[in-house]
Image (tube, rainbow, N blue to C red; front, side, top):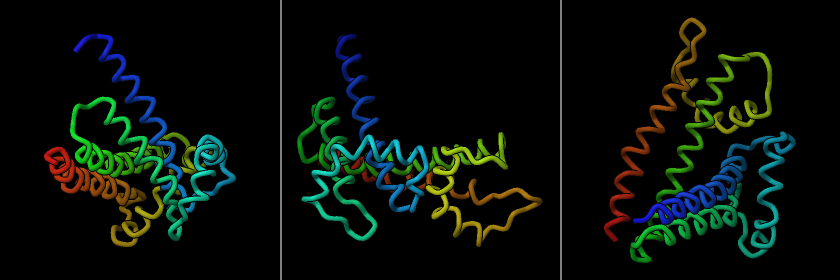
Length: 183
């Protein structure tokens, strides 16, 4: 493979990845009931609305799950793999779906990490990124906080959530991806 092809594949991966992350963030924000008056949430809404609004008239919501945003994320992710890999179409459709699940888990892990970093740097202040990360992680951390007590002011539920998400990547996503590649 030439250097130019490598650079092209890299640019395709990054640009398509950004679009996928934006739409996945929108879906996860809706599921986590993130405050839409937050500047970070407003930015994501403004970036995704021009593409999403016409499609959301065709594809309805299913409860709190925005199927149109999820469909766009899956199609863009699948198109990315179609452009950069020489795999058959059924495998690419499955790979696009499995890697979308992996990206959603990674987004939650990054949100947990952001929450931890902000708790060290400025525990009392509320930065917009910190608030969004906290609201994204709350559905995962809240059940764990009821099970795992805090020891001396240290909250180990975030660590347990990160371990659980990493185990989900290893035990669910990796086998699904192996199966998808074999299609």
